[in-house]
Image (cartoon, rainbow, N blue to C red; front, side, top):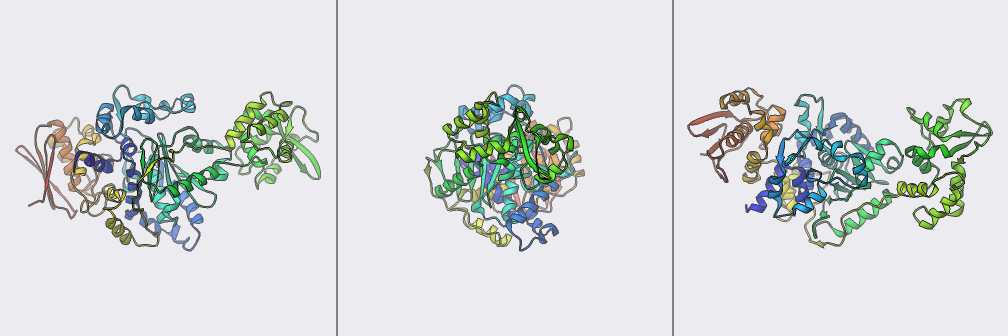
Length: 575
């Protein structure tokens, strides 16, 4: 491989935050790798989903949400995959993207987002303030196997993953387990978050482990407000689906322009809600400063009764019932008699009266003239009526800052697989289109199938981007490291001819003999970069340095000879 391709293909192995930002094919490559993963195929055989055979994709998706919440936790431990240096990463990518653009769009290089993120001190929120100077963490995206393996790590009872890992897992499982077509699954990445838009019913957005329907998006709860944070406050960096990708910084794009137009329309519909009684209540739920100016009016036992809005929202707390949705009457049954008033409360406007005015005047809250008319109506009660109407309009409609549609579109063969195919059929199909679809080609590197990939990218990633194994061995001699590796279980987190990286061995404390050999080679190379390290991969894998040999047993059907020098890797068939 030439230097540029080697950088890209080795990035498909490590999948750091920066690598996925620079090489937009990588995100969907990991989705395809997860679709090939036997781990997710096993979910289909789980009794949880077997019971839903023949049911709608929607029913399966709602069950998938609970399954993922039970099996995975959100992991934001930035030290999981070790540390690197800003200058090192900038030097790697200068041939692809300018340091200035990186700094403007990546949290590890100074990006702090828009005003919202300044207000919440986003670097402190994510823990980035603990790193000073040139030091930054690797922010790596995990494969499905690496996510599941977190249960082997101290402090974890289940699998885990950060937002990008969870989004790729959700995308793959939505297709494989729920049967949602790939063309209806869109990945949406911002500098600080990763979500998917699933084009099913009114639309669904995945947010870490959760799913957010359109009604949930506008319900005004703290969870929904957090789910909105990225799309409401950030430029979308990347959109990807089975037809390709579009990136905010690149003039070229490979996504099908018709599918991108479709997404823009459907996402716009999802992010807009009407001004009605339910949604005004939702607005007040998250805008508590305005609650003292409003009251709710209901007929109760044949009489009009009034209740202060903040009192009624207080009853909501800890209750499964909500104001103005289908459970409203049940919520009212929980209100104490003394909290009702038979008279309209002075100095407060009835929410029902407000909506009646909106409907009678046909007010469009997105129209400045409509907001002015509404503000004049509210002015007698609400001191900052214009501010309320502006905030209400922002609450009910979000204009996502998607990558500009004006790009040079390159035609790439789309990925066309179906959920009713077998795993073998899908893998064979992806193998057949590798020459025509770069994302499919990269998927096999993210999948780590070493019988279908060049070894050089894997080797480069193993000995250049695995700082955890080096730090873990810092105070040990070579013999002590070797004995420790030999004492670990000889089980890989990957099946068949797929290989873990040294830092996966370090984090999960298990590995096949080949994987342990790469761990040792990575440490030896770091300690003496001028020495040659040779790995002979066969059933009994041997690591050789000047005058030393270390033997490891392997159960993987692989044979290869690898020589690692300071600046090059020589790979040949093992004798």
